[in-house]
Image (cartoon, rainbow, N blue to C red; front, side, top):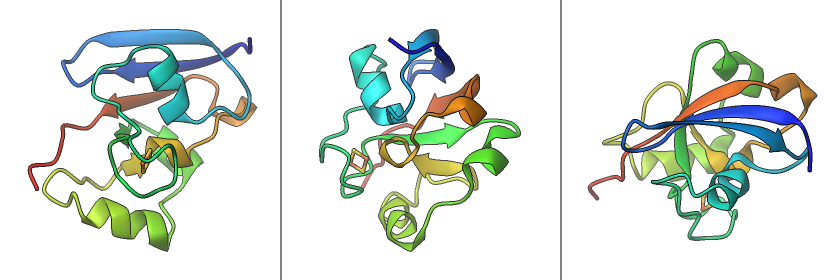
Length: 111
Ligand code: FES
């Protein structure tokens, strides 16, 4: 067990403070391990489904950085719910720099 912290707001608006995230775990994997509602990770982390879509809150978006072209193309498929701070949770891997990160689970796209 790691000791990194992640704050999730799930798709119903419920807050979950995780305090034992491992270094290297993705925000999709961690959400599934902790039963965070609204994160499915259907493609297993392959950047091919967008069911791990989150909004990275506050100044954390600058730390995680923008999506690359492949991820952006995937997010573009859910453009109806995409925001400027959208990322795919499976593409964000935890490390000490992201300790305390806050993300909100995006609603399922209507496409
Ligand atoms: S789990 Fe499919 S894109 Fe993240």
